[in-house]
Length: 288
Image (cartoon, rainbow, N blue to C red; front, side):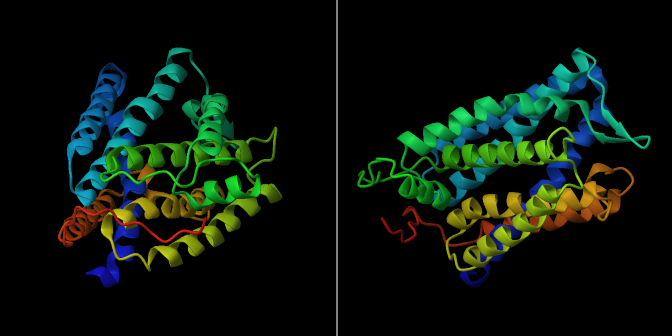
């Protein structure tokens, strides 16, 4: 299966995007304001438990998948619904253009969290050695004195690495899109937004090319996270331009398509677990 490891990893992570959106919509529509916040809290708590469990797993693949779902549950349950709660509590109104809601209230207040994200990025940039090619490139170009010969631990906490990676990248590109949509800065038809859309497409294709060369499922899933999220920028902007019908925001209307998406995801997830397991972490070649 190693021949298709990168492709399967990409598809598994890709399908979490529409399924995650659909889950949030279903929770809001089904549970209502009376119960949705409790359900969101429990979803985030389940993510925390999954993260703790994944941290104790010795198998890299299982630990990575635990981190993937933990990150998704925490992001959806505690972060996204946290903004939903604050927006509803203080009666924040959605952004409406031509009689249609183009930005929900929770996303209007999310840009206020940009400062917190900047602090996290600065921490990773100035005081931590990471396996991220972008951070390594920035550290090298800015001549940041980050120790590069640190001893490699026998067992990394892949669950935490994966969960933090997912949340940080989702957070980053949510803010990129929200700031680009804001007419105060650019607007959804501004040249900068076009640059983000097609730049993300090209960037994701470069990452996908590298991803398809990976033969180890755990590493493929972790590499697929930025590849998918950056590609999803292009998808989101197409939806904003009304070029693409975002069926995942209408799961009741397109229930058959969403069920098929879920079935495909479950099958691919099951196939990905069939890969030969190993305790030895995959370490890609890097240049220092």
